[in-house]
Image (cartoon, rainbow over all chains, first blue to last red; front, side):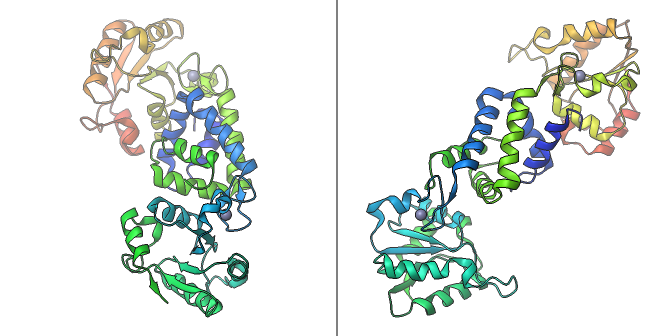
Length: 197
Length: 197
Ligand SMILES: [Zn+2]
Ligand SMILES: [Zn+2]
């Protein structure tokens, strides 16, 4: 570009973020530079903090500023319900819907023959262990309504059959739909109408 | 949200950037955390560098990693042509078009009675001074085709009349159009067909 090496590098790096292309990255950098004290400095500090402190919750796979995330630490959420989601974005979507009071288990993806993703890559063994250890009474499979999502749900149901009540989100999740794109009301409705597997 | 104070703050701050809303900010944070070493750490460092080092070029108003920007430092660009733009985004748009070989003067906005922006707020006195001091032979007014942009162009033309050749971008700039939204070819065509004021 024409302003210097660091600025060009910053534009290039921001343009890699989801939702930003080169043009919005340029606009973003100009705004950051214009609001150095109010936006750029705090953002740099915050990113540094997050880079140093944030990791995966060792229990559920949520991202967390300590070894165990706030949801796993919250004793009020030990109600025996465990909601299995594909990734952290889906966990956040469930939380935004505001109606689930239990805990989560983040798989970190779905089984996929094509991408050679097996159960070991997905925290499925951890899930089986948690159901044994944590007094779980119901596992809610909140996986996306995709082929891989449903294959994964069936595999997990097989693993847990007979040990626990198994349900899945039902009404309201459109075919092929992804949780993170749904409005809160739809998620709430799907949770209320969850059905036995 | 559900992951911690710093993460929530980071999402909130990123959502303020142009082009990002809350949803893409959440996605961005998840990607940043996933790519801690490759993306989050370097981005935090780069933002810190930029926050510390980047300022306005004291000559032209471009943003710059030193007191004077690379364009003003480049002796090959001292060809007597000075292109006046509203803001740095417009300077970058001109540079991307790749056909202007002179230097710039960034006004930092347009005259506006409504917003009480007068010539003193806009580096217009600096512009008159530069034309005197720097052997400028032609001032190209590359202001946006908006009412305020054209008002500002006329004001500057009045100030400089008789001291220098005055031109403006012409063919190709659509009515109400903003430079930063135009493709490079259009800008090049407008530059080639520039006309005397
Ligand atoms: Zn957790
Ligand atoms: Zn400069």
